[in-house]
Amino acid sequence: MAEQLRGKLVVERIAADLAPRIEALGRADIVPTLAIVRMGERPDDLSYERTAKKRAESLGIAVRSVVLDEFAPQEALEAALHEVNHDPSVHGCLLFRPLPAFIDDARACEVLDPRKDVDGITLASLAAVFTDGHAGFPPSTAAACIEMLEHYGVPLEGRHVVVVGRSLVVGKPVSMMLLRRNASVTVCHSRSNDLAGICRSADIVICATGRARAFDSDYFASGQTVLDVGINFDTHGNLCGDVDFDRVEPIVGAITPVPGGIGTVTTSMTMAHTVAAAERALAERGGEGR
Image (tube, rainbow, N blue to C red; front, side):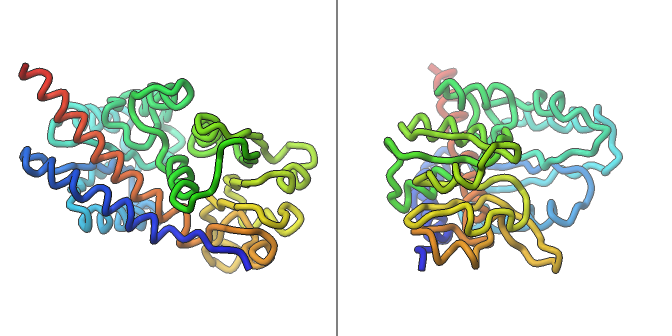
């Protein structure tokens, strides 16, 4: 049976790494603070907000919720983001998406200050991912994939990684982050010819398509490492990933479960980015004082 790459151990290590950094910020009278901006009361948003607040509280990070009506106009959302930008006590911002259809998503994202963009939604943050820059932060889910692989000592240099999914949330940024670590990356999608064959050829497969249990045993080979990024619900309302875990787990060498895998680490990466944003803000403040 495959080794299960569980997020809990990664989360515990991240917490241990953050503790002295948060303590150091406290000595400078700074509490790392994350603003969560959301429109309406979608159940999945509320669930994630509760999870984020619980994780933040355990670490000593403050969370502020900025809640707008689900029918609030573009101007109201942009005003809320401007307020976050100009509040020196807020270090990171997490804008819950997808936004309502009448909102210009790209325009809203560009209102956010890249220095407070802890989930890689601004063009400046994404450009940094693609150019090895330092503005903003990568999307938390993409960062969680790298964190998971590195924590479990999965070799990346020279390895063939197949990423199935081409979104700006996971597929494209994680591909760039893997290339930076000298992996050989193949990016696939639903229209790729012989997708199953391409996946079987890989050392590592990252599935990020948002299709419940779309990847069965035909897509995998012995010894592979599989990261399942999907968060879906099947026809019976059960939480599941993109990978048919029961059929794939006996074949591969290692696999992340859903729940308990990448999603768990994603929340911690958001917190880590918030702490790093607070540290950068402190460094900038110190520079201004000289």
